[in-house]
Length: 102
Image (cartoon, rainbow, N blue to C red; front, top):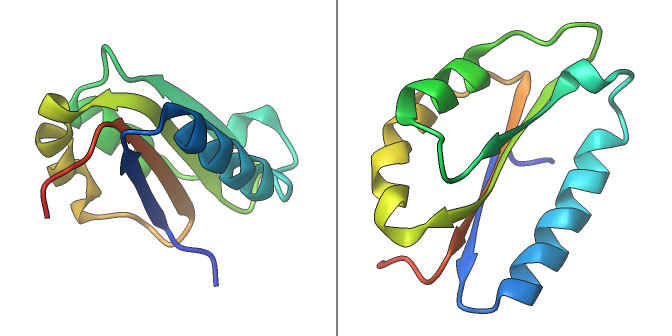
């Protein structure tokens, strides 16, 4: 079963990039168009923008993939409310540069 939300975080930037790239390739394999994938800029993304991207319905594709890679640890908590309602038709990948507290 594919998770709807995947959060990767840690100190090893190379490992984060490798795993997030592998995940995105797998999730994008089933998409039939570029409309199903949306990459948001970690330096400018807001909770509202992320929530809007997550709630957008798929167009031409069986699901949507939303990715935000390279989120600063200080910004991660502020984005969390956007994950409250993730439709079954959306897969979300977030990577955080640094270790998050438990």
